[in-house]
Image 1: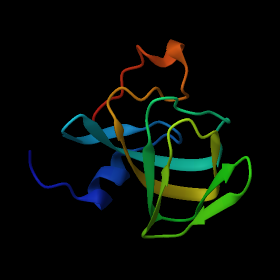
Image 2 (image 1 turned 90 degrees about the vertical axis):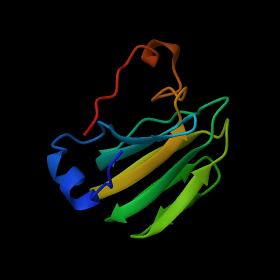
Image 3 (image 1 turned 180 degrees about the horizontal axis):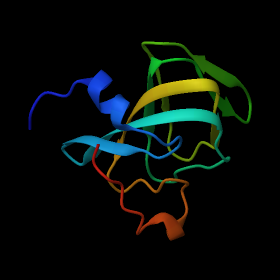
Length: 117
């Protein structure tokens, strides 16, 4: 594994809401994703996930509150907590999550391969 330059890697990502693998650590993936607009409400019954904002602003809508993340801030979503990521403008985020995490918490996502960036 070589060092990872986030600016170089994010420059290769052209689609929103399409995570790309940037690394592996133990049983976790490190993913890079560009976000803009709203994702759907979902939860991960058995896994936690972490959103770390590198550029822009991201709101993690929870059923009881909103968590607004600016650059260089992160938030860990506890397992089983329903959430909806919202990015009014382009946002770059690093995701840390177990390799078993389904993208929308749905079984039909189990075979969805995530490409490397």
